[in-house]
Length: 140
Picture 1 (cartoon, rainbow, N blue to C red):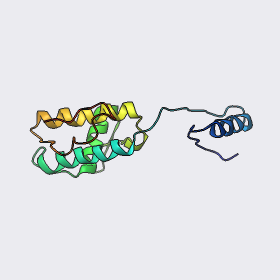
Picture 2: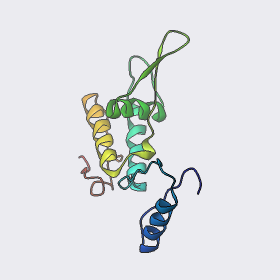
Picture 3: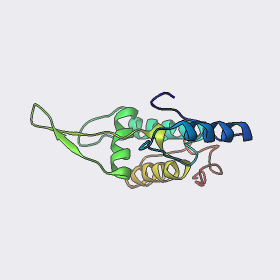
Picture 4: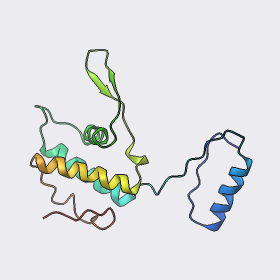
C-alpha cells in the first residue's frame, strides 16, 4: 500500500477497490471521504469572474491579478491564518480552490459576485453559461 491514494467512486469496481485498500490499511490509518469536487464549468466560471474583477477594479490604489484575487476571496470564504512577512507586512496562508466541493465552490463564486457588485464590477459574459450547474443564475 502506498502512503496515500484516492479513488473516485464512479463504478462498482471502483467501490470494490476502495474496500480492498481499506482492508489493507494499517491500524491508525486516516480515511477521508469528500463530496464531489468543483466541476470544469465551475472552474471556467471562477476564472471568468476573477478576470472581470481584476480587469475592472482598482483596490486600494492597485490592480491585482486574477490569481491574487482568488486568494483574497478564498480567504474571505474559508478564513485562515496570517504570517508576518519579513518586511513587516502580512501574508495570508492560502487555501486551494481545486479542493473545494461543488457546494463550497458555489459559495465561493457567490462571494466573488457579491463583492464585485458592491464595487461596480460588470460581470456580463463572466456569468454566462454556468447558472444551472452551480446554482447561480446569469445576471443581466
